[in-house]
Image (tube, rainbow, N blue to C red):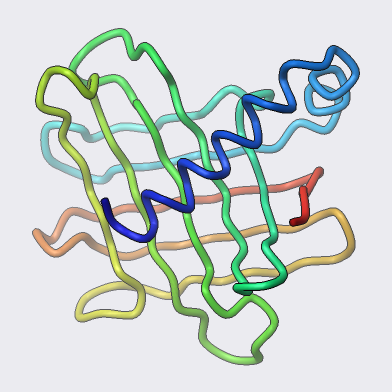
Length: 162
């Protein structure tokens, strides 16, 4: 399991725990975190928007990392967005950001397809993070190692901290 997968799955665990309390679920729905993924070509070309009440924005102080993640536990088909997210490894540092983008399609029991992009690496575009209090925005525009254009935008109106 890759490092980004562990971080994204940890963030998914936080969402699952938070969803157990009605107040937490209600607060998250009101906040409306946004995750939009645009795949420019290939068999998964299209625009994917995660449900706003299922997108988690998490800042981990000890590591330090900023993560945005979404997970569909029962995707509707092989081209359905199963999970997506971005990880920023140096959120407080000035200058270019380092991190990862992960997009998975289909169910985990039927050979899912995924794009896993290390940033920076050859051919990848910039990863940006702007943050103010409990609000933030993460963007990435670049290409996968196979040359597939990808744009990911996340707007966080509610950031959990650990």
